Length: 197
Image (cartoon, rainbow, N blue to C red):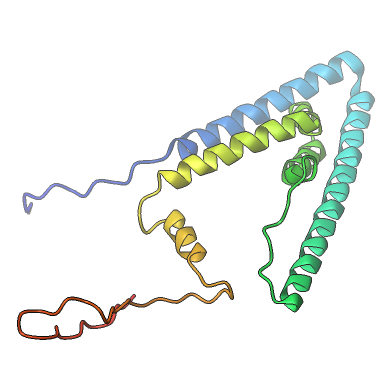
């Protein structure tokens, strides 16, 4: 028995969810094809040594990036602790040119550790500071565009609400009632109920 109402529409699938499995399959096929091509031309031992060398280099890069991230974190923590002891509001962390793209450096190390020549090429590209800076600027612009296009009640709205706070970090929600508000025709107006979240 039909009721005449149309069935509910299924949510539209994003392009990322549609094309990501296909892109991963194509990447795996290309990696295997390239490995067999190089093994046929240079030999299996050469391919093995190249893969081991990439994994060792990737591990060294990840270790260096991890140490740098930990050093930045401990410096930021010490600055925040000193600011809290002096009673001032901690400043936003400063980012210098080479240190602000540490995540891309770590991603480059991880790509080097993955067996395959395409991932090694991408990892080596991410070791170049200019490439990391360009990717970082592109990513920041893309995130800012997404945040500016967000609808109320979204992540952007939550960030905006988090920024509206007192200097001591406490969020104060309420309603302003002015004593000099105009009086109604029958005297003072009845108080309004308080705002509720």
